[in-house]
Amino acid sequence: MSMARMFLDQHAFLHSGDITNGPSFFDQAFADLTDAQMRVRPGKGVNSLAWLLWHMARTEDVNVNLVIVDRGQVFDDVWARRLNVSRADIGTGMTADEVGDLTESLDIAAARAYRNSVGRRTREVIESLADSVLDEIVGPADVARASAAGAIGARAGWLLDFMQNQSRATRLMIVGITHNARHIGEAQTLRSFAGFGGGR
Image 1 (cartoon, rainbow, N blue to C red):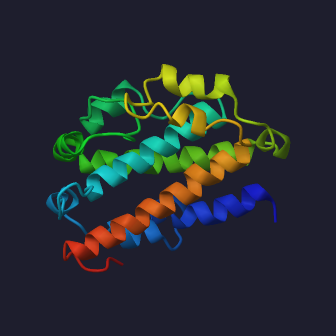
Image 2 (spheres, one colour):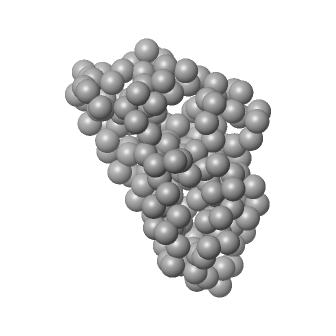
């Protein structure tokens, strides 16, 4: 099995079944919830499901489309208006108050649609990449594209070093699989803690 095929198989579990019509850990954590439930923060300093949805989408979009390849991210002025979010960064380093503000303003339906669009784009990108490209090392020019797009927040400058000196395949697995899986686990715990049931 190729690296790309393995990635796509795992990636499908971490996005909505709307993308691949298959089983989805994402749907188990995020399905059958009202917008009000998505905005709940059931403890001091705890993220909301709404924030997690947005953060996962932004992180994958920026890393796949600006760092791993250079084709322009899905996010643009139209998505910014639809999402009702005034910031372009991925959310790393946000304060509790900033998480609260975004949680209240975010258009939940638009965030779900945006994440689906990001997931579909990721799958298109991976299917088009040669193994030789995935073996290349992420360097300063790659992360500079993310920085220039405003994707790295004021308190997240450490990411610029963290994202470098690893293969594009490694960066892809971190943001497309590991990062999403960690936050979906967080979402499932948050959902249970808030008393919203187990999802699908």
